[in-house]
Length: 286
Image (tube, rainbow, N blue to C red):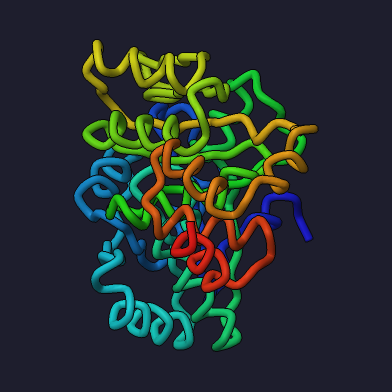
């Protein structure tokens, strides 16, 4: 097969096309070729993707595919793929199907026996990880935290003992509350790299502690999109000492760190491998 045919677009195939997260020059030649040759493009936001295609001089039919229409639109896309058309799936920026409804479309294609091919490219979380100065050998991607405070604190409580480097996405208007919650649950001394506007002209990496980041963004209005890279939980020789505390005292300790009683009981039960009712009963008896 000639070299030029290795990247040919095949019928009946869904292509996951990674697009720039800020710098148009990061778009690969293969991505441009696929976008130019597929029958149609499925996009999280057809307006944003339409601008991108226009800058590339590409004219393709666009269909919207996002969180609130993914069920019915996914079926439509899969039907067209089954009929022999080819489709490129793009998200607003970065790699589709990562913290993105594209994962549902890939799962649907897999269930229907439809070929899926990935065109690698920019990923905001991995870009941030490489710039963070924190350990990169083992990491855990969490994406966006739950918007409801109680659920957010519960998720963070579950992650508080995670020793791998943690990656989060966050919007500017939610950044301060997230940093405050991270401080409350993880402690203010944990290291963080706050990565803002990656690959753009205003790219900024703030390497500090959780307490330092929270204070900085109280004094400086958050602007742009953020990736938070947080160091994992340190190895603690005192871990056994904590587990030697009376159950009620350990619950109170977590409450002092900012958790609700319910979440503190849940965390203690998880760490001690005990039924939640046993921890709850210890609180009643205190």
